[in-house]
Length: 119
Image (cartoon, rainbow, N blue to C red; front, side, top):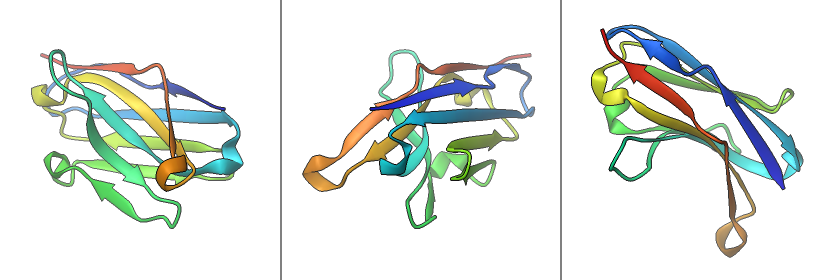
């Protein structure tokens, strides 16, 4: 089992910045991919950014260079720096960690942290 705890959400004005952090515990040596997803009310959860085990980074198209994901394997953490936030970025942001591959892949999720963009 892997446990994930997020922090850093909150209220920010349009154009502002927030940094989300996620700390993993438990079977951390089994983690390969870590990343962030988000879900707005009434919509499906969607990928924001992930870091693979080989440090390859993938961003959703809507990030448009505004967000930066980083990972500290020594501390078992992953962070998401979000700049130039827009109202469309509102939602609950979830930290994700994956263990295993193919049919043996298991997804773990944090409890979610709320991001509100409003003036």
